[in-house]
Length: 548
Image (cartoon, rainbow, N blue to C red; front, top):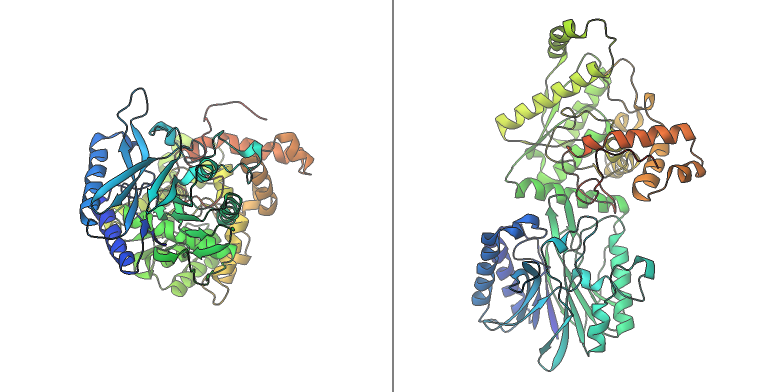
């Protein structure tokens, strides 16, 4: 039996584009002799369509796309399993099912519905979909094939400790007991660092324990803050890897379960995975939102340098525009570093001084500020003027503005609302500062793209004389350790102190996190590349007084 894998990048709501891509891939795999062709989860409408699922016209467009696929594949010998959203006419119940249509020779032979609906982190499927009561088998040429959808395969009794299992029901186990000879899994499993290792170990264990081959076809591409890595896999009944599709790229492939070819796998370093994931998410965000170019402020610092390098990788140097916006506190070295970075990347750098504009605003506000000492207010005026200028350039030239803040700064509010937070996307907003440095060194592994001084000099916002980040923050290695323990591992204040951190430092950092929540909820979307990112997967009230 030959299985065709359509590891494709679907765009939410682009039904014609998604169908066209599917049909092209289907034709290719049929010519390669595929018996069954499989798409990712909810492929026709795109994952995750969120409240578009509540629109009847969106669901009707999904149905029209499905009918077109059924008609256009009627001549093909191969069955097609395609993910889509199906209406649920039964009440009470949610309005939809997360479904798979098994199509053969112009007919929908069977429709299978998802059993386990994730409602945690970035997932909110219970908001839209009715869960199936049990997993479904499909009889195909005297074989029994179990068809599952993403989460259905993430609840294995043996792989996951009882404390980590979210559901009582194990669809794959039930399918195996019912006689399944093959398990197909249509997936839209977002990537984060370490995810693929866990995914492969789980699938291998399930295949071995249940004694059935497993084919998982995963979505690839970026949709809003989510990045899907692809890396579709096939395991035989002993848990041995038969096939691994490329990571962070579209791919079509045919796997013969009876005589598999040698597996070719590519091992990427953690930094390269982050680089490729962020570049993919950035590219798709820009293109799927209808933009052609991006712009960003280049300060000469490490963060803007890394974002610029990622933007060039994602979009090409001709579509990236850098702007240096020096104030009277900007050092000559920083401007030199920004120029050198632009030269190394081959992008234009436009220098737009803001000192006169800052002075004008200070004079305007002078009578109102009389008797008040200069403080962060004057510093923020500079950052906000830069935001005003970048947004003006966006309006005039159609650039999408990238913000350059990292996760460490966003965590503690070391960023200016309506200033350096202005923009449409935060590419490195899920990287700790220490990870930004590691990524910069990886970018420079063969050639110096990022000036050495940007990596080695003390980080500074340069909003007052001789300022460094460590005037207000501990060393980033210390800060990141506290933030990781608090925000990701949910350690309490006492546990942070037991880890060896000074009580006054812990209290200061926790206070900064707490009072900055309102900023984060107005921030640009962050590309999620860790298990716990700012955005839709983290739901913290703004107004609260818990200090645990």
